[in-house]
Length: 54
Image (cartoon, rainbow, N blue to C red; front, side):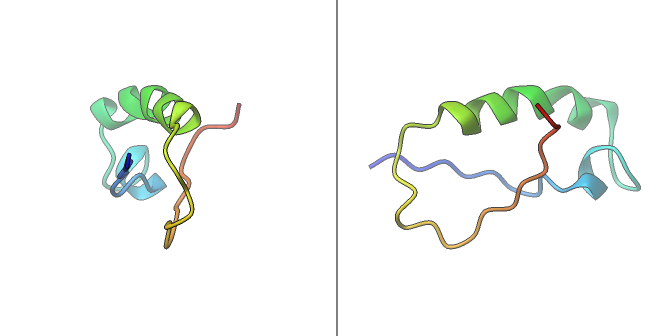
């Protein structure tokens, strides 16, 4: 079983009040990992998206 966990990828922690340039710098790589994830989504309880528009 493959599991992908993305924690606190909310705008506040990326490019707003609590954001940093380092957080902004990882957004594209995190979005790519999410798009390429080949595990199952069947047991997903909640998914929060804070990805840049394609």
